[in-house]
Image 1: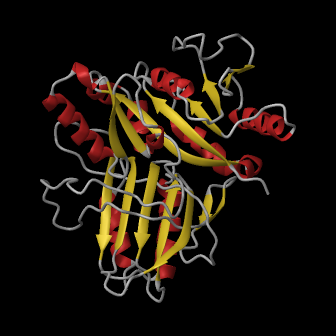
Image 2 (image 1 turned 45 degrees about the vertical axis):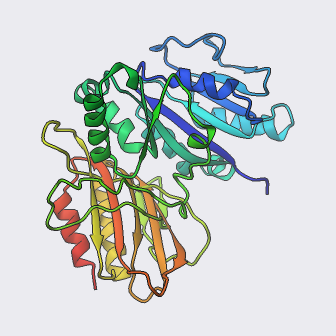
Length: 370
């Protein structure tokens, strides 16, 4: 079986700098052959030397071996076509970057890689990267829910145009983003210059990837009941995508599986964002059966409102960490490394979503503890 083709989703509101970053990536001397899919609906002015804007879909081969195509149709079909042309030796590429239109919700794009079996066999969703305009980001977050969704889905956040604002404004934006999505690392990108290691192979959807959360996250907030956590792993579940039902197997047989996870958090008072996140933490072990039943119910009822969720779990009777993550109703989990003898066993979970019932979820998780 040929190795799977990694895919990066590049999202962000109109004018956030996606095309500038993309141009830098395509022109950099990194030796990679990248296929760029431009999901274009005409709202944005794309530089013609990068991406084609004809009325029909088209693929152009660039001098450095990269490929660009503009799509106005079904993403799964276009990915399937690219994979077939790669197999037939007509196209040569190592990875795919999908640039969404600035008004797009990245959720359905991400779901393509889990709902379509043929796509899931060929392509591996590596990460969702969201660009945020430092000068206009706060206003866009206030005005457009799609911008909040773009933040909520992100594995990494790039703040652009930071030179146009002062330190306080930049700090306030960082603080807000951190509250909305504590699992996404935040980087500053000036004029599209980003280290290629900050863009590719982030393993945001890999079950054994480390999830870093800012250690000072919400340090000034006094939440008596639950603490805020920073490093998470993921878990595997079997999902019936057609019916939106999940059989959340939280102690998997083994294997490296992928899935999605969404969560919510509470924010400082100046912004009443619909997208929020919260982190659940406990030193007591979970009862595996009770937790499976509870999470299965939560995903059925609130799955559409859950954007991402991730966690590393301490399970009764299991000597390994159980890691899980998901997007909407699609959850995955896996067994990770053994707990070290000196290590304090605990569970950490982050939920990012739209108006999630935090108290109901935390109370329900408490009830699943041994």
